[in-house]
Image (cartoon, rainbow over all chains, first blue to last red; front, side, top):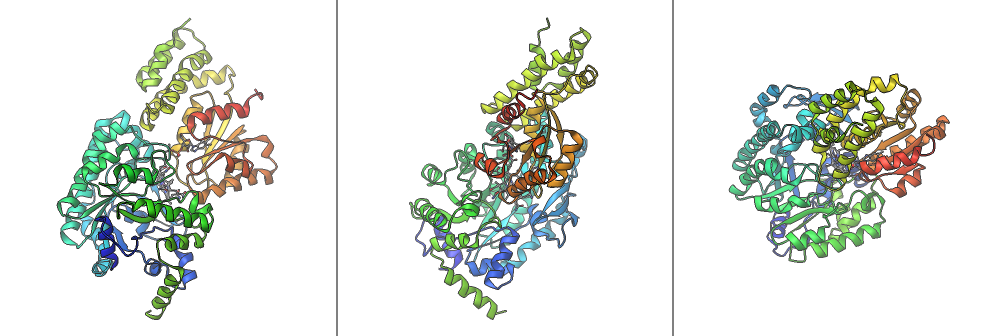
Length: 360
Length: 213
Ligand code: B12
C-alpha cells in the first residue's frame, strides 16, 4: 500500500497494512532524530515512514514556516504581524491591531494580494502526490486569526465586551481562509483540507460554547464546506477541552479531529471514539504532556498499543499522532516505541535512513 | 450603612461605566475607600470567580468584569495609599523563560487583584534572574510562576534555584501553575504551592501569607 492509499483506506474504515502515521515534531526533536539517523532534519519524516505531507498556506506559515537563524531575529508577515524567534519557533512581538480603533479593525485588509505567494508553499509537496497523502493547511481560520491581529486578551475581551465587532472580525478572518481554500482545492490534488482554530484550554473552552456556536461556528462552517464541496476530506485542529463543540464540528462536515488531548476533561480518545467514531475519525491522542516526555519506553508502547486497538475497533478511522508537536525533552526511544507499536520497526527506520544517505 | 449590592452587581456584569459612577458616589457619600473595596469590589469579584469556577462564566466574561474592577480600583488606589491601607500582600506574577502563554497568568492576576492583592506583572518569557531582581525591587511577598509547556516547566525549577542561590528564597513564597504543572512537581522543585486554576490560586495565596499579616 502506498501512504496515500493507506490514509484514504483508514479514513474509509477499510483494511490497511498498518495504521497511518503523521507526527509533528519540535524543530529540536527533528534535529535530534536527524543526527541519530545521520540524515538532514528535513528528511526525518521520510525515514520514519510518515504517511502525510502537508504545508501551511495561511497564517501558520509565518509562525513555523519562516525559520530564523538567531534568537531575537524578526520579520513582519503579510498580515502586518511582527514575529520574533524565541527558542525554536517564532512568536508574536507586535499585533497590528492591538490598541487600534474600532474603525481600523473593521477596515483591516487581509493580504488577498499575497495569496499566490502563499500558495506557492504547496509546490514542494505536489510532486509527492502520487505516493503520499497531501494536505493543505489554511489555518488559523477564525478566532485564532483574530487574536493574532489584536492579541489574545483583546480578542477574548471583545467576545464579551463587543460581540458585534468580534463577529465582524471573525467573518473577515474566515473569508480569507475560505478564499485560500477555494483556490487550493480547485487547483491542487489535495487529499484533505486542513482547517484549525484553537479555542480551548486544558480545562475547558476559552469562550462559552454557546457563543462559539453563535459567532465562530457559522463562519468556520463555510471554510469546511469548501473542502466538502470539492469532495475532499476535511480535518480540523483544536487543542484542549473541545468536547462541547465536537457534535457541531461533525455537523459542519469535519471528518478528522486533531490533536485529541486525552488528559483534558471529556477528551478521552476511547470515549470519543465510542461516541462519535461512526462519523468522525481522529488523529492524535498520544499525550505529550506526561507520557512522551516522562513515561518509560514500555509505558509508551503499552499506551500506543492500547489506543491503536481501541481507536481502530471499527476497522479504521484513526491516524497515529501525538497530541501536538513532540517536545525535545522526549527520549527518542519513546518516539521509536510509538512507531514500533504501529508496526514500523526501529530497524526499518534506520534502513530507510541509510537509503536516504545513499541517494543523496 | 451603604448597600453595596449595586456596585457588586456592576463588577459581576462588567459594567465599567456604572462601576465608576457608583465607586465615586460611595466616596462622595463619605464611605471610606477601604470599605468600598472590601464590601463592594472584592465581593463582586468573588462572585465572578465563583461563576468562572462553576462554568457559568468563561474567559471573556471574566475579562469584562476585570475591566470594571480596574476602574473602581483606579479610583480607590490613591485614597487607599494615602490612608496607609496595605494590600493583602504583594504578588509578582510572570510566565517563565521560553514561554509566552499568558492568558492563564493574566486570569490569576485578575482574581488576586480582585481579592485585595497588589499585583506586579513581569510579563512573559521572564528569566530567573529577572524574577529575582523584580522580587527585590518590588518587595513582593509571593511569586506566581506560570508555564504551559513541558519544555519550559524546568525554568520554574531554575527560578526557584535562582532565589536559593541569591539567598532570598526564604523572603518569598513561590506558587506555580499552568497546564502541565502538578502538585507533585511543585513539591519536587521546592515551590510552596500549586493551584490548578485562578480561583484556587487566590485561596493558595491567602494560605501562603496567612498568619504573616
Ligand atoms: C492558546 C495557546 C497558545 C497561544 C498562546 C497565546 C497567549 N497569549 O497565551 C500560542 C499560539 C502563542 C501558543 C504557542 C505555542 N503552544 Co500553545 N497552547 C495554547 C492552548 C490552546 C491554550 C492555553 C490557554 O490559554 N488556556 C487558557 C488559560 C486560561 O488556561 P491556563 O493557561 O491553563 O491557566 C489556568 C491554570 O493553568 C492556572 N494557572 C496558569 N498559570 C498559573 C500560574 C499560577 C501561579 C497559578 C497558581 C495558577 C496558574 O490558572 C489559569 C486560570 O484558571 C494550549 C492548550 C491547553 N491544553 O492548554 C496550548 C499548549 C499549551 N501549547 C502547546 C504548544 C506545543 C505550543 C507551541 C510549542 C506550538 C508551536 N509549534 O509553536 C508554541 C510555544 C510558544 C511558546 N514558546 O510559549 C502545547 C504544549 C504541550 C506540551 N508538551 O507541553 C499545548 C498544551 C497544546 C497541545 N495540544 O498539547 N499556544
